[in-house]
Length: 183
Image (cartoon, rainbow, N blue to C red; front, side, top):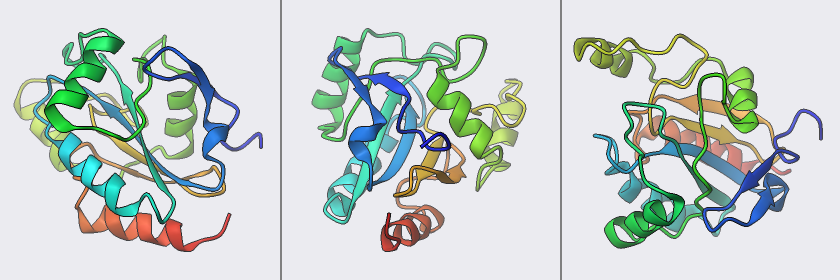
């Protein structure tokens, strides 16, 4: 299990300690989320995706992060309330973490190491530059709502740019490929 993500400790948004080992045998879509981002409406698509594919074995896991222009300033309780009231989020949310920099959470260190490039990378990177924002160099997380697809075997299968929405055919095809595999 050393190559998998299962042993990495995480904390649920309600403060309970957890490990990704709870999701052994599932396909995971790990997403760094934020409440005050232009991409925040992606919560709606992620929830729809979760509801439509959960029975097949997909788990969407949301990790709030405040690394990009302070777009997730709230406490865990405020984030949870926002997600519940604005988007009726039922997929698992975790405690706010850092996804880049010297305090990067071990989960994101492992994810970015395993998948250094993202499908769909380019247009969003150029968009950030157009706004005068210097994008993080690869393999760092580019922005909020970057997605990592983890197979049933606990290994990163693919990574998707922040602007690849939950209904993007590339993401859906990759999820379906992983769901079709056995652990």
